[in-house]
Length: 543
Image 1 (cartoon, rainbow, N blue to C red):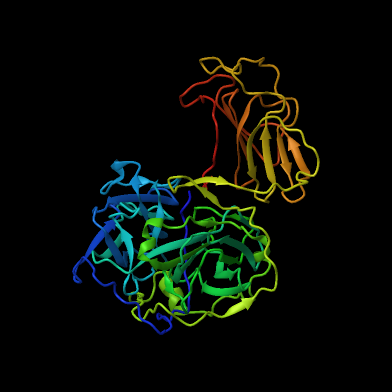
Image 2: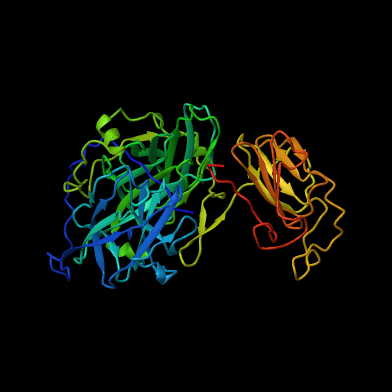
């Protein structure tokens, strides 16, 4: 799942500081100056029929080099929760080309995927600065574009949606090319009843070229109050402010207040601040509208010669723990109220005209800095994703082990499942002294070991996520080969046993015997009354 998120910023003075030297158009362009055209990518009258549907459609691009200079969304926040445009080197399935579409809620949509644009909450159109364009086609890494729309709710009966985006392009070579660097919060849970809770992101900029951020976009869901962005200069050991946005305003790319230059070894950082005082349960970072997100998109320009380098991978999680404790003051102070922006975000009021950067300048005033007054340690532990040889996010993460957790030397068998309950405690489903190997099942999926010897020790262990202490353990004498574990909103435990070929529900008030049993004991099958090695179970939000 990667790539499901978004939100907004600035008191919206839609201008950029006037500076000294205008960007100059590149001399000797091989294309005529009037070579402008447009291209649409829209959903093909889709009918999302489940909550939190993520639908995608794709277009193959002309092989010639071109530059996007303006994004013009055609979508309404009453229909779509948010919209993202991705660029791809290859498409994994050619049957996904428009006018077809597919469910793209999980996994990468294509090879060498990079984000190109984001929209939510009735954001207006956006026009790039002069001499700046988003390179596609030609020798770039973008030969396909994929439109992804998140529909938080099913559409009413009899209605379909063809929301999308008009791209304004030119074949005239631009002096500067655009890219987006995404800072993404991950693997976090927001506890309930907190008026101010932070999720942080930071990582080193490791590229061998310079980028100039000029616009930003923030994104959270309903609990988000403010998102702030900075970069840390490791040479003079100071913080420089980049952006601050209100995620409840239209989720557009807004201009930064001044020019910035990010070089190798600078550290990008973001902080998302949430208010969970009205929540009674923790809220996790995730892709659904009931989850939360923490995203800061930095749109930058760089020299044309850097085009073949492609976009940098996302910045995920925290690489430098010291920076989290030493952000500049005011990082979590919300922006002043703006009723017009709030009304527009929720479908009222008029739309702003396109955000433009006509007065954008290459050189600008220096940004105010904040001397951090601390030393930065080694970068040996990075909590972000690795990128494989093809430039793809491979979802391998590096973590530090928390020593001393759990608090005592617990003995587990094969661990089949781990999840969190709604109080943030860790639930583990393990197999005790039973082992799944080549002697466990016959060719017809029948369980071979003795059927009168269930696991004698507790198979479900509940641990305090902070202390690692055992809070509860149960499930002895019931299971033979544990596999799936799910805890529903009401606290019920749903478990699967692949030896029994059954699914069980245990009420939170009675863990001695199942409240519901599905499937026939030790009998594999594939009909309305049988399962064959049921691997997992989930409960819909409606119960």
